[in-house]
Image (cartoon, rainbow, N blue to C red; front, side, top):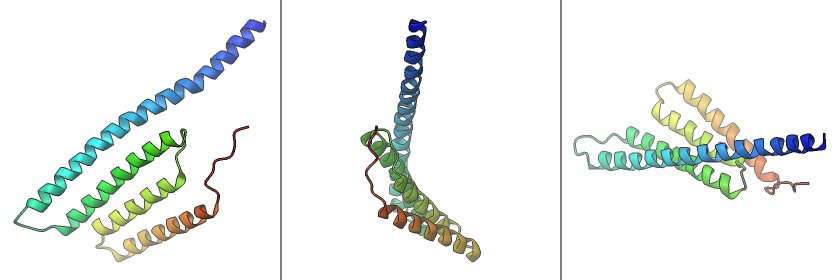
Length: 142
């Protein structure tokens, strides 16, 4: 009876490790894919800048913001591994603000929608401001 209990405890301790390994491998794969997409955006920047015919600043700004979204996701993955498997919430707020700014730049024909997106950005900034009042240290594991 005692050995069955130990075997069960060993199995239960193994499950989180396997899932953590799967998560880590998935995030590494995602980081590689995002890095490739980041390089693709750099190539698109060069193509836009070398085009002589037209200067599409709206497209250029949208691509810059997409570049920063990829960059923020990659830096969030790096931070995840540096912070011992923890995603800081402020990185999600950065990504949300960047995404909303991109939407405003790309789809600014409707002022009501832009006002709504600006309100979302304001809420995210207030949330970031509130998060800065809380301590950044993680609680000690007991």
